[in-house]
Amino acid sequence: HRVPDLEMALALKFAAIDSPNRRANKKRQDKVDFVSIVAAHGGEIAEDKLFSFGEMVKSGGGKEILELVKEARGELDSQ
Image (cartoon, rainbow, N blue to C red; front, side):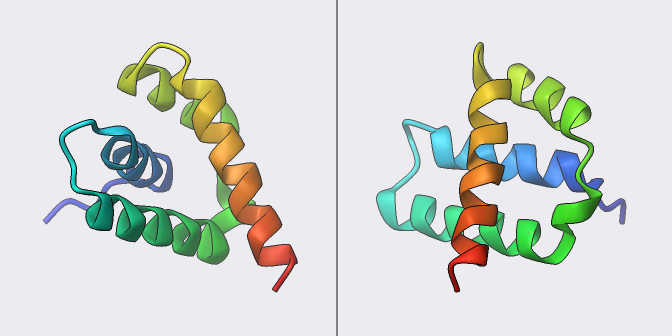
């Protein structure tokens, strides 16, 4: 099996969080997963690559996904 790289995994979670067709409880779990990934690998994230993947999800998604990473880091710092 091929494992997606870190930025792709975050972009896939971002796409799920942003999906209009996904149930709210699944979106909450996707957000938890996103934060967990950032917690485990936050220092390794290539932000330029993540921005590009976010833009592939939707126009303006690059800025949004970087904002989610920033929020996740803030949540982790406050714990």
